[in-house]
Image (cartoon, rainbow, N blue to C red):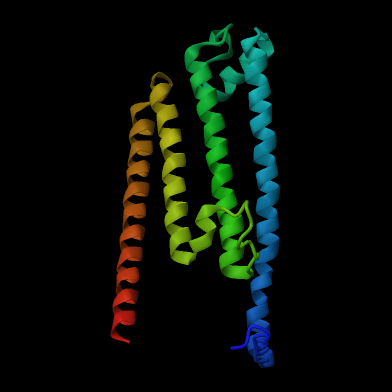
Length: 209
């Protein structure tokens, strides 16, 4: 091909019949759902900063902030027995709560960005300096595995908070949370194993072509 010769323009996609076009366009019904998740993300940001401000105020000896933090992380403690100063356990539980909010926020981002890219429309982020690394190879199977991994991380934080505050939980609650966490682990392993089987079958089919 001559260097002065321009490549032939791509042919326009074939027009769809009315019914397939309607079915294909129905994917945009998911858009309000993702917009709603963005609003939920905003609520988590607000909650994060409220808790962080209370923690900072409690560190400077604000009695009301200490009581609010104790009520949020030690709900089974009666008001009369609430601590009058910030303890290491309270700080740890509040920080774990903040980490929990961040991890749930990360989960929301994966669902919003990955779901929109996979099920609604391309976002055209190829080559963008801020494109998430995981988005370059995301598909429905990869998204399921990443979501399962994120849920396990969130469950781990909740379980750690329960173990740190074990004195204020009964044995049944601790055992139930541990059992639920194990169920999440097994579910994620099963999803990853099924995804591996499907990828292996796809490679075998491609090799036989």
